[in-house]
Length: 199
Image (cartoon, rainbow, N blue to C red):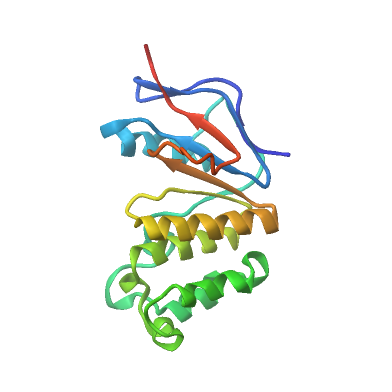
């Protein structure tokens, strides 16, 4: 079953285009954004289209899509002293039935802090890798399709997040869309779409 598709090229910045694609339910779809210094500008154009916030006549969206941003502040919390603790955030934003309690447990296993201290930590003080994974879990708690990237994530963190997301997608039949500027040399994804430079 398709969750997102484009029947025509999507023009980007007047310099690039994204060829027609189809993202299927229960898959890991990799968009290789070969844009060099234009990477962020390309994302700024593509993400609103994927989230159905910007109309594109060639794009059909069949399920709600959620973007897991670089930090938890982007999905409802502010920086500073008003940032909630991890425990408060998990209680308010994570649906255990949708994401699986075992995936929450991996948060504690992959932290240098013990569980009680980690839960008391404010979310704006968490490591970037953990930030991103919790942001992804928050998205999967309310949507079947999640868009994210690995920018700013360590190699170990990337491996951990990818492994966890792959398991969730397989178990729950959700869909993950990864927008990245690294070529997948290990063929880790189910499908690829590569942005093209106009000739």
